[in-house]
Image 1 (spheres, each protein chain N blue to C red):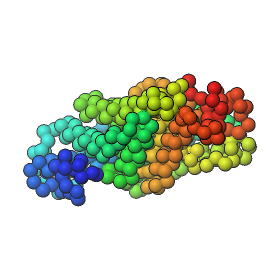
Image 2 (cartoon, chains in turn purple, orange):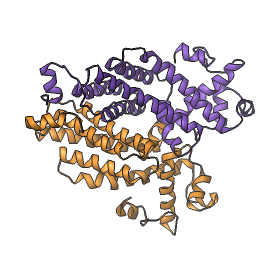
Image 3 (spheres, chains in turn cyan, blue):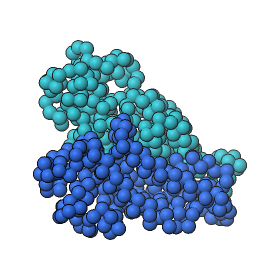
Image 4 (cartoon, rainbow over the protein chains, first blue to last red):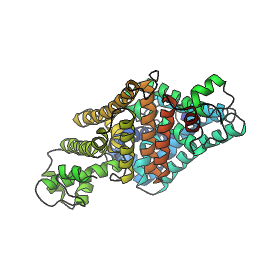
Length: 228
Length: 228
């Protein structure tokens, strides 16, 4: 986790147990977000969470009025980390294909860091929350929509800048790129094999190669046949 | 769910509550497998399951000695359904690319049927079980390995039969195809939008088109252009 996001959460690198004031709540939420990636939000017991942060259950309840409030605060914590560690470092890159590759690399580095034992927090809890309407689900959907929207905007910018074929189906391209990232998340967590991350990166390039304009004739013919 | 798999489980089409004998256990397990796709195995409470099948908690405990035994039986039930509904109808197809497409279509039809509210059972529970060694996790890994092995064998058979380029990286191709299926599962459950299934199917064809041998130049150009 980046020093920036830990600091924003009121923590320092290496924090695993609460110390004082604001950071107690932050440490609880960080531990809870990590646990939720393997146990789900439904499966996250207050008892297990209290044990993880070295507090009593009643001590933990003092920080959150209800399980619903705790869940929303967990999702907010994960959203802050995702924004600071994945999106912010990449969004400064030049628009179009350079920013797209920066976002992909940033996401894969985030998986590789294994800060969350169950991989991407949002992929882990999204399906579970899908059947439970409420503010936690709404925020998860908002983070996913923003992410897919960023990928989409990169493709459109790349088309406008003449980097990608303007005939390319934007929604299809976003689907295929997101597919590589979801597979990286799932298969890397399952196997702990770094090759899964490399394969995802290669998969993204294979998608782009089909749509790149101004590739040399040799590349073009191997990637997508002769131009129409 | 197919009549064959329901019958093998001791149920008939439309069964949602236990009736008698062997089918009581089967109905409990089917309901539990469905619930597990949204709540996870950890989040599956005996109380919620008992309510779902219209039994008392003690009545339900009479069928299973422990939560661990229940979990393994749930995974076995899901494995039977996956085998009967996804693999068996497709495995009879001609080896190579025909069988590969049959497996893909079969999997997407299984998602479309929405028999499991949280999508593919194995995708739903795999990450959760990853941190909990035991027979349930082993069986989940076995089902996933078999599935990926089937896709791999189809690619190899397609190469031997001259349908796909023998230079194609088999592991990379399997990764990209599985990526489309994982994305279909995740995004279809999240959005209930059938376009996600169509995009996955198009994504698989885009992967294959890059590797198909003996396509005519005309086909090559139209198939490798934008996937409209």
